[in-house]
Length: 408
Figure 1 (tube, one colour):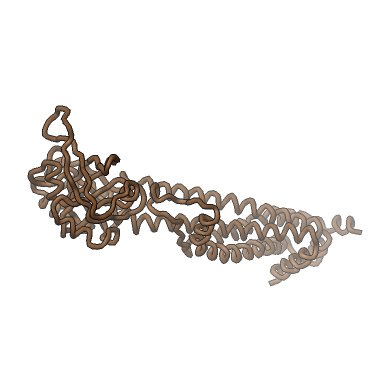
Figure 2: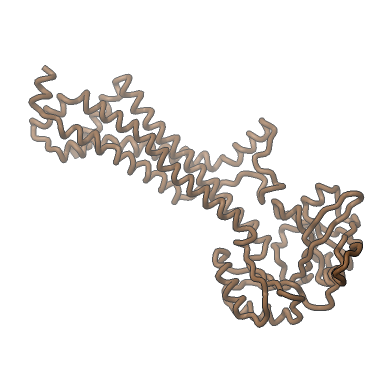
Protein backbone atom coordinates (compact mmCIF):
# COMPACT_ATOMS: atom_id res chain seq x y z
CA UNK A 1 0.00 0.00 0.00
CA UNK A 2 1.52 3.30 -1.13
CA UNK A 3 0.26 5.42 1.76
CA UNK A 4 1.55 2.93 4.34
CA UNK A 5 4.99 2.90 2.70
CA UNK A 6 5.08 6.70 2.67
CA UNK A 7 4.09 6.79 6.35
CA UNK A 8 6.90 4.40 7.24
CA UNK A 9 9.42 6.42 5.18
CA UNK A 10 8.38 9.64 6.93
CA UNK A 11 8.72 7.91 10.31
CA UNK A 12 12.16 6.48 9.49
CA UNK A 13 13.53 9.82 8.34
CA UNK A 14 11.91 11.57 11.27
CA UNK A 15 13.73 9.24 13.65
CA UNK A 16 17.08 10.54 12.39
CA UNK A 17 16.32 14.06 13.58
CA UNK A 18 17.10 14.70 17.24
CA UNK A 19 14.13 16.94 18.03
CA UNK A 20 11.67 14.89 16.01
CA UNK A 21 12.96 11.68 17.56
CA UNK A 22 12.51 13.08 21.06
CA UNK A 23 8.94 14.28 20.47
CA UNK A 24 7.95 11.09 18.65
CA UNK A 25 9.46 8.92 21.37
CA UNK A 26 7.78 10.93 24.12
CA UNK A 27 4.39 10.48 22.47
CA UNK A 28 4.89 6.71 22.22
CA UNK A 29 6.25 6.48 25.78
CA UNK A 30 3.30 8.51 27.03
CA UNK A 31 0.85 6.08 25.44
CA UNK A 32 2.83 3.10 26.81
CA UNK A 33 2.81 4.44 30.37
CA UNK A 34 -0.81 5.57 30.13
CA UNK A 35 -2.00 2.15 28.94
CA UNK A 36 0.08 0.31 31.54
CA UNK A 37 -1.09 2.38 34.51
CA UNK A 38 -4.73 2.29 33.42
CA UNK A 39 -4.72 -1.49 32.91
CA UNK A 40 -3.13 -1.94 36.34
CA UNK A 41 -5.70 0.40 37.95
CA UNK A 42 -8.64 -1.37 36.32
CA UNK A 43 -7.16 -4.72 37.37
CA UNK A 44 -7.06 -3.52 40.96
CA UNK A 45 -10.74 -2.54 40.78
CA UNK A 46 -11.55 -5.95 39.30
CA UNK A 47 -9.70 -7.55 42.19
CA UNK A 48 -11.70 -5.61 44.76
CA UNK A 49 -14.96 -6.53 43.05
CA UNK A 50 -13.95 -10.19 42.90
CA UNK A 51 -13.07 -10.22 46.61
CA UNK A 52 -16.36 -8.46 47.37
CA UNK A 53 -18.34 -11.15 45.54
CA UNK A 54 -16.29 -14.17 46.61
CA UNK A 55 -15.62 -13.21 50.22
CA UNK A 56 -17.84 -10.53 51.72
CA UNK A 57 -21.04 -11.62 49.98
CA UNK A 58 -20.48 -15.17 51.19
CA UNK A 59 -20.25 -13.89 54.74
CA UNK A 60 -23.37 -11.70 54.87
CA UNK A 61 -27.01 -12.45 54.02
CA UNK A 62 -28.23 -11.26 50.64
CA UNK A 63 -31.81 -10.69 51.84
CA UNK A 64 -33.33 -10.54 55.32
CA UNK A 65 -36.89 -10.35 56.66
CA UNK A 66 -37.38 -9.14 60.24
CA UNK A 67 -40.74 -9.30 62.02
CA UNK A 68 -42.17 -5.84 62.71
CA UNK A 69 -43.40 -6.87 66.16
CA UNK A 70 -42.34 -9.88 68.15
CA UNK A 71 -40.99 -12.98 66.44
CA UNK A 72 -41.88 -15.38 63.65
CA UNK A 73 -43.69 -18.11 65.57
CA UNK A 74 -43.94 -20.25 62.43
CA UNK A 75 -40.70 -19.31 60.71
CA UNK A 76 -40.74 -22.61 58.82
CA UNK A 77 -43.65 -21.24 56.79
CA UNK A 78 -41.62 -18.13 55.90
CA UNK A 79 -38.72 -20.32 54.80
CA UNK A 80 -41.00 -22.46 52.61
CA UNK A 81 -42.53 -19.40 50.93
CA UNK A 82 -39.08 -18.00 50.22
CA UNK A 83 -37.82 -21.28 48.76
CA UNK A 84 -40.70 -21.33 46.29
CA UNK A 85 -38.73 -18.69 44.38
CA UNK A 86 -36.22 -20.52 42.19
CA UNK A 87 -33.70 -17.70 42.61
CA UNK A 88 -33.46 -18.33 46.35
CA UNK A 89 -30.56 -20.69 47.06
CA UNK A 90 -30.99 -20.98 50.82
CA UNK A 91 -33.25 -19.71 53.60
CA UNK A 92 -32.53 -20.02 57.32
CA UNK A 93 -33.72 -18.62 60.67
CA UNK A 94 -31.64 -16.34 62.91
CA UNK A 95 -32.12 -14.35 66.10
CA UNK A 96 -30.32 -11.01 66.12
CA UNK A 97 -29.76 -8.81 69.14
CA UNK A 98 -27.24 -6.32 70.45
CA UNK A 99 -25.25 -6.87 73.60
CA UNK A 100 -22.21 -5.68 75.54
CA UNK A 101 -19.28 -8.06 75.80
CA UNK A 102 -17.05 -7.85 78.86
CA UNK A 103 -13.54 -9.27 79.10
CA UNK A 104 -11.86 -8.30 82.35
CA UNK A 105 -12.25 -4.53 82.62
CA UNK A 106 -12.84 -4.05 78.88
CA UNK A 107 -16.24 -3.69 77.21
CA UNK A 108 -17.25 -4.11 73.57
CA UNK A 109 -20.63 -3.69 71.89
CA UNK A 110 -21.42 -6.53 69.48
CA UNK A 111 -24.21 -7.86 67.29
CA UNK A 112 -25.14 -11.32 68.53
CA UNK A 113 -26.55 -13.70 65.93
CA UNK A 114 -28.24 -16.93 66.92
CA UNK A 115 -28.07 -19.64 64.25
CA UNK A 116 -29.40 -23.17 63.83
CA UNK A 117 -26.54 -25.53 64.68
CA UNK A 118 -26.25 -28.21 62.02
CA UNK A 119 -28.65 -26.43 59.68
CA UNK A 120 -28.12 -23.93 56.86
CA UNK A 121 -25.66 -21.27 57.90
CA UNK A 122 -25.53 -17.61 56.87
CA UNK A 123 -21.78 -17.69 56.20
CA UNK A 124 -19.40 -20.02 54.39
CA UNK A 125 -17.79 -22.49 56.80
CA UNK A 126 -14.22 -21.82 55.61
CA UNK A 127 -14.27 -18.51 57.48
CA UNK A 128 -14.54 -20.35 60.82
CA UNK A 129 -11.85 -22.11 62.83
CA UNK A 130 -11.87 -25.91 62.90
CA UNK A 131 -15.23 -27.40 63.89
CA UNK A 132 -16.22 -24.27 65.80
CA UNK A 133 -19.77 -24.24 64.42
CA UNK A 134 -20.41 -27.78 65.66
CA UNK A 135 -19.21 -26.79 69.13
CA UNK A 136 -21.95 -24.16 69.30
CA UNK A 137 -24.29 -27.03 70.14
CA UNK A 138 -23.02 -26.90 73.71
CA UNK A 139 -24.82 -24.65 76.21
CA UNK A 140 -23.72 -21.02 76.63
CA UNK A 141 -21.08 -21.04 73.89
CA UNK A 142 -20.04 -18.34 71.43
CA UNK A 143 -17.92 -17.98 68.29
CA UNK A 144 -16.24 -14.56 68.15
CA UNK A 145 -14.76 -12.48 65.36
CA UNK A 146 -10.98 -12.58 65.02
CA UNK A 147 -10.82 -8.79 65.35
CA UNK A 148 -12.54 -8.81 68.74
CA UNK A 149 -10.31 -11.65 69.93
CA UNK A 150 -7.13 -9.79 68.95
CA UNK A 151 -8.24 -6.45 70.35
CA UNK A 152 -9.20 -7.84 73.75
CA UNK A 153 -6.76 -10.71 74.05
CA UNK A 154 -9.45 -13.38 73.97
CA UNK A 155 -8.56 -16.98 73.12
CA UNK A 156 -10.56 -20.12 72.48
CA UNK A 157 -11.56 -21.60 75.83
CA UNK A 158 -11.92 -18.26 77.64
CA UNK A 159 -15.18 -17.36 79.35
CA UNK A 160 -16.69 -13.95 78.71
CA UNK A 161 -19.50 -12.05 80.34
CA UNK A 162 -22.34 -10.83 78.15
CA UNK A 163 -24.47 -7.90 79.30
CA UNK A 164 -27.93 -7.64 77.76
CA UNK A 165 -30.63 -5.04 78.43
CA UNK A 166 -33.67 -6.35 80.29
CA UNK A 167 -36.44 -6.74 77.69
CA UNK A 168 -39.19 -7.57 80.19
CA UNK A 169 -39.75 -4.05 81.46
CA UNK A 170 -39.70 -0.52 80.10
CA UNK A 171 -38.12 0.73 83.31
CA UNK A 172 -34.38 1.18 83.63
CA UNK A 173 -32.85 -1.88 85.22
CA UNK A 174 -29.41 -3.34 85.51
CA UNK A 175 -28.55 -5.53 82.50
CA UNK A 176 -28.81 -9.28 82.57
CA UNK A 177 -25.50 -11.12 82.76
CA UNK A 178 -24.65 -14.30 80.89
CA UNK A 179 -21.39 -16.24 80.97
CA UNK A 180 -20.38 -17.56 77.54
CA UNK A 181 -17.45 -19.80 76.65
CA UNK A 182 -15.50 -19.00 73.47
CA UNK A 183 -15.41 -22.21 71.39
CA UNK A 184 -14.11 -20.80 68.11
CA UNK A 185 -13.21 -17.79 65.98
CA UNK A 186 -14.17 -16.56 62.52
CA UNK A 187 -12.42 -14.21 60.12
CA UNK A 188 -14.42 -12.52 57.37
CA UNK A 189 -12.16 -9.49 57.06
CA UNK A 190 -12.99 -5.86 57.74
CA UNK A 191 -15.36 -4.45 60.29
CA UNK A 192 -17.46 -7.62 60.58
CA UNK A 193 -14.64 -9.27 62.55
CA UNK A 194 -14.93 -6.48 65.12
CA UNK A 195 -18.71 -6.42 65.42
CA UNK A 196 -20.21 -9.90 65.46
CA UNK A 197 -20.51 -13.06 67.49
CA UNK A 198 -22.43 -16.29 66.82
CA UNK A 199 -24.39 -18.38 69.31
CA UNK A 200 -26.91 -21.20 68.91
CA UNK A 201 -30.62 -20.48 68.59
CA UNK A 202 -31.19 -22.02 72.02
CA UNK A 203 -28.60 -19.74 73.63
CA UNK A 204 -29.99 -16.72 71.76
CA UNK A 205 -33.50 -17.48 73.03
CA UNK A 206 -32.21 -17.72 76.59
CA UNK A 207 -30.33 -14.44 76.30
CA UNK A 208 -33.21 -12.61 74.61
CA UNK A 209 -35.92 -14.23 76.75
CA UNK A 210 -37.65 -15.55 73.63
CA UNK A 211 -39.89 -18.53 74.28
CA UNK A 212 -40.21 -19.65 70.68
CA UNK A 213 -39.74 -18.49 67.10
CA UNK A 214 -37.02 -16.32 65.57
CA UNK A 215 -36.65 -12.62 64.88
CA UNK A 216 -35.31 -12.83 61.33
CA UNK A 217 -35.28 -15.08 58.27
CA UNK A 218 -32.32 -14.59 55.94
CA UNK A 219 -31.82 -15.65 52.32
CA UNK A 220 -28.98 -16.38 49.94
CA UNK A 221 -29.79 -15.85 46.25
CA UNK A 222 -28.15 -17.01 43.02
CA UNK A 223 -27.65 -13.49 41.61
CA UNK A 224 -26.55 -11.04 44.28
CA UNK A 225 -27.24 -8.04 42.06
CA UNK A 226 -30.91 -9.06 41.83
CA UNK A 227 -31.18 -9.20 45.64
CA UNK A 228 -33.23 -5.95 46.03
CA UNK A 229 -35.78 -7.14 43.45
CA UNK A 230 -35.99 -10.64 44.94
CA UNK A 231 -36.38 -9.17 48.43
CA UNK A 232 -39.37 -7.07 47.40
CA UNK A 233 -41.05 -9.86 45.42
CA UNK A 234 -40.67 -12.48 48.16
CA UNK A 235 -41.53 -9.97 50.89
CA UNK A 236 -44.84 -9.14 49.18
CA UNK A 237 -45.85 -12.81 49.36
CA UNK A 238 -45.26 -13.17 53.10
CA UNK A 239 -48.36 -13.37 55.33
CA UNK A 240 -46.84 -11.16 58.05
CA UNK A 241 -45.60 -7.59 58.24
CA UNK A 242 -41.82 -7.54 57.94
CA UNK A 243 -38.91 -5.18 57.55
CA UNK A 244 -37.21 -6.01 54.23
CA UNK A 245 -33.47 -5.56 53.88
CA UNK A 246 -30.78 -6.59 51.41
CA UNK A 247 -27.00 -6.46 51.14
CA UNK A 248 -27.11 -3.46 48.81
CA UNK A 249 -28.46 -1.41 51.71
CA UNK A 250 -26.05 -2.72 54.34
CA UNK A 251 -22.86 -3.34 52.35
CA UNK A 252 -23.70 -1.79 48.99
CA UNK A 253 -21.54 1.28 49.62
CA UNK A 254 -18.48 -0.89 49.00
CA UNK A 255 -19.74 -1.97 45.58
CA UNK A 256 -20.81 1.58 44.70
CA UNK A 257 -17.39 2.90 45.69
CA UNK A 258 -15.72 0.36 43.40
CA UNK A 259 -17.99 1.30 40.49
CA UNK A 260 -17.40 5.02 41.14
CA UNK A 261 -13.63 4.58 41.09
CA UNK A 262 -13.92 2.46 37.93
CA UNK A 263 -15.91 5.26 36.24
CA UNK A 264 -13.31 7.82 37.29
CA UNK A 265 -10.58 5.59 35.86
CA UNK A 266 -12.42 5.43 32.53
CA UNK A 267 -12.57 9.24 32.46
CA UNK A 268 -8.89 9.45 33.35
CA UNK A 269 -8.23 6.96 30.54
CA UNK A 270 -9.63 9.38 27.98
CA UNK A 271 -7.77 12.36 29.45
CA UNK A 272 -4.42 10.57 29.71
CA UNK A 273 -4.68 9.33 26.14
CA UNK A 274 -5.69 12.79 24.96
CA UNK A 275 -2.60 14.33 26.56
CA UNK A 276 -0.37 11.61 25.11
CA UNK A 277 -1.88 12.17 21.66
CA UNK A 278 -1.07 15.89 21.75
CA UNK A 279 2.54 14.89 21.12
CA UNK A 280 1.41 12.99 18.04
CA UNK A 281 -0.29 16.16 16.79
CA UNK A 282 2.88 18.16 17.45
CA UNK A 283 5.05 15.57 15.73
CA UNK A 284 2.88 15.42 12.62
CA UNK A 285 2.53 19.20 12.39
CA UNK A 286 6.32 19.50 12.50
CA UNK A 287 6.54 16.77 9.88
CA UNK A 288 4.15 18.66 7.60
CA UNK A 289 6.14 21.86 8.07
CA UNK A 290 9.48 20.22 7.38
CA UNK A 291 8.27 18.04 4.54
CA UNK A 292 6.42 20.77 2.61
CA UNK A 293 8.65 20.39 -0.49
CA UNK A 294 8.36 16.61 -0.51
CA UNK A 295 4.58 16.79 -0.08
CA UNK A 296 4.37 19.37 -2.86
CA UNK A 297 6.44 17.17 -5.13
CA UNK A 298 4.21 14.18 -4.39
CA UNK A 299 1.14 16.27 -5.23
CA UNK A 300 2.64 17.32 -8.56
CA UNK A 301 3.25 13.63 -9.29
CA UNK A 302 -0.46 12.94 -8.87
CA UNK A 303 -0.86 12.09 -5.17
CA UNK A 304 -4.37 13.25 -4.27
CA UNK A 305 -5.56 14.68 -0.95
CA UNK A 306 -7.20 11.41 0.07
CA UNK A 307 -3.88 9.59 -0.06
CA UNK A 308 -2.10 12.42 1.74
CA UNK A 309 -4.63 12.15 4.57
CA UNK A 310 -4.19 8.37 4.57
CA UNK A 311 -0.40 8.76 4.80
CA UNK A 312 -0.55 10.87 7.95
CA UNK A 313 -3.35 8.71 9.30
CA UNK A 314 -1.10 5.67 9.09
CA UNK A 315 1.84 7.54 10.56
CA UNK A 316 -0.07 8.57 13.70
CA UNK A 317 -2.00 5.31 14.01
CA UNK A 318 1.17 3.20 13.80
CA UNK A 319 2.69 5.28 16.59
CA UNK A 320 -0.42 4.77 18.73
CA UNK A 321 -0.57 1.08 17.88
CA UNK A 322 3.04 0.57 18.93
CA UNK A 323 2.40 2.38 22.20
CA UNK A 324 -0.80 0.41 22.82
CA UNK A 325 0.90 -2.97 22.25
CA UNK A 326 3.86 -2.25 24.51
CA UNK A 327 1.62 -0.53 27.06
CA UNK A 328 -0.73 -3.53 27.17
CA UNK A 329 2.15 -5.95 27.72
CA UNK A 330 3.61 -3.74 30.44
CA UNK A 331 0.16 -3.28 32.00
CA UNK A 332 -0.47 -7.04 32.15
CA UNK A 333 2.93 -7.60 33.79
CA UNK A 334 2.31 -4.75 36.23
CA UNK A 335 -1.19 -5.99 37.08
CA UNK A 336 0.07 -9.53 37.65
CA UNK A 337 2.85 -8.34 39.96
CA UNK A 338 0.84 -5.58 41.69
CA UNK A 339 0.12 -7.48 44.96
CA UNK A 340 3.81 -8.37 45.32
CA UNK A 341 4.88 -4.81 44.52
CA UNK A 342 2.52 -3.38 47.15
CA UNK A 343 3.70 -5.97 49.69
CA UNK A 344 7.33 -5.04 49.02
CA UNK A 345 6.51 -1.34 49.45
CA UNK A 346 4.78 -2.09 52.76
CA UNK A 347 7.83 -3.96 54.02
CA UNK A 348 10.27 -1.26 52.92
CA UNK A 349 8.24 1.73 54.11
CA UNK A 350 6.76 0.01 57.20
CA UNK A 351 3.14 0.92 56.60
CA UNK A 352 0.00 -0.97 55.61
CA UNK A 353 -1.91 0.18 52.53
CA UNK A 354 -5.17 -1.52 53.54
CA UNK A 355 -6.01 -2.03 57.20
CA UNK A 356 -7.99 -5.19 57.89
CA UNK A 357 -9.72 -3.29 60.71
CA UNK A 358 -11.52 -1.17 58.11
CA UNK A 359 -11.54 -3.06 54.80
CA UNK A 360 -12.71 -6.57 54.01
CA UNK A 361 -9.28 -7.39 52.59
CA UNK A 362 -5.80 -6.76 54.01
CA UNK A 363 -3.84 -6.89 50.75
CA UNK A 364 -4.35 -5.19 47.40
CA UNK A 365 -6.01 -7.66 44.99
CA UNK A 366 -5.50 -7.58 41.23
CA UNK A 367 -7.24 -9.38 38.37
CA UNK A 368 -6.64 -8.23 34.82
CA UNK A 369 -9.18 -8.95 32.11
CA UNK A 370 -8.87 -9.10 28.35
CA UNK A 371 -11.83 -6.74 28.02
CA UNK A 372 -10.00 -3.97 29.89
CA UNK A 373 -6.80 -4.56 27.92
CA UNK A 374 -8.71 -4.40 24.64
CA UNK A 375 -10.66 -1.32 25.73
CA UNK A 376 -7.57 0.64 26.78
CA UNK A 377 -5.70 -0.38 23.62
CA UNK A 378 -8.60 0.53 21.32
CA UNK A 379 -9.04 3.93 22.95
CA UNK A 380 -5.30 4.61 22.55
CA UNK A 381 -5.30 3.65 18.86
CA UNK A 382 -8.54 5.51 18.08
CA UNK A 383 -7.37 8.71 19.76
CA UNK A 384 -4.03 8.42 17.97
CA UNK A 385 -5.91 8.16 14.69
CA UNK A 386 -8.09 11.17 15.56
CA UNK A 387 -4.95 13.14 16.40
CA UNK A 388 -3.84 12.84 12.76
CA UNK A 389 -6.82 14.71 11.32
CA UNK A 390 -5.56 18.27 11.83
CA UNK A 391 -1.98 17.64 10.57
CA UNK A 392 -3.38 15.72 7.59
CA UNK A 393 -5.69 18.63 6.78
CA UNK A 394 -2.72 21.01 7.00
CA UNK A 395 -0.87 18.81 4.51
CA UNK A 396 -3.74 18.93 2.01
CA UNK A 397 -3.68 22.75 2.07
CA UNK A 398 -0.12 22.92 0.73
CA UNK A 399 0.07 24.58 -2.69
CA UNK A 400 2.71 22.71 -4.74
CA UNK A 401 3.91 25.70 -6.75
CA UNK A 402 4.27 27.97 -3.73
CA UNK A 403 5.96 25.29 -1.60
CA UNK A 404 8.49 24.42 -4.32
CA UNK A 405 9.18 28.10 -4.99
CA UNK A 406 9.84 28.78 -1.29
CA UNK A 407 12.14 25.76 -1.14
CA UNK A 408 14.29 27.07 -3.97
